[in-house]
Image 1 (cartoon, helix red, strand yellow):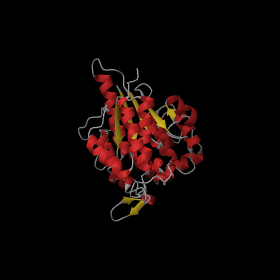
Image 2 (image 1 turned 45 degrees about the vertical axis):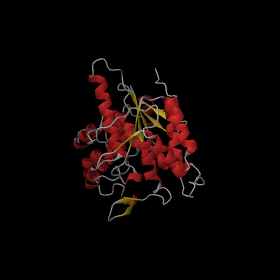
Image 3 (image 1 turned 120 degrees about the horizontal axis):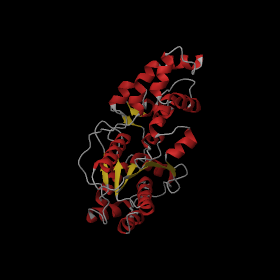
Image 4 (image 1 turned 135 degrees about the vertical axis):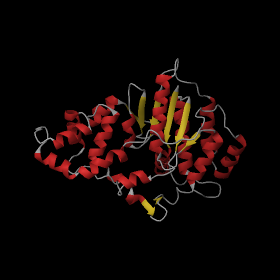
Length: 319
């Protein structure tokens, strides 16, 4: 049973910046993010024919457990320190509630968890799906497609479990299908778990993660190839008889000891976020047609909503 997990904020941010802001409601409000996301969903359903879909949501874009571990985590993106709100373009912010309402009227599951990011929802649902497929007698093999513009989710790639990432490097209609071969080709690591270790060592300025000074992507990949994982690298760091590290590499790893002690907690997505009970089946028709028609008229969404309607009605599960 195929499952598609949407990193919703990643997709509506991409739509906001990629779709002209000349798209307006009858009252003149911008709706480019709403329409762009709906068009993306319609295309994904038509092209990939998932049986189930979840729009994963950031109930907390900067969770306390990550900030406690590394205070700089996303700190540069805080709009209001008092309430912890994120910097969001003024024209995008009012579109987000509209997106939530339209998804509800369509009957597409939208799921978040208090204190967790959408990445954690995706990690939890991925683990649940893989476990279901492996432990339920007679169940079909799982296929999980994660749609995101965030490389952090590459850590979930697992060929054996049928998990890949559709990464819109060139746009949502021409995504990279990131599997283990793609990770090896582009980053020099063999698995999603190895990618998480690489990301920890490399850091990510866009998320306020400093990484280990002087150890970039290529060096991190070489060290992981030599020592297997981050734990192996740290054992080598602490073993002065080990000759696989240069003196400079060992010094930099020692200097980053405090960061490396907590960074995996921040970089790795949660697999146990507390999620509500919900139905992830894609409907053949909207769940609340009257509400959807009202929203369509209010916000001028007719063409985009019709594309989703047609995609849902014409969906045939892939074999």
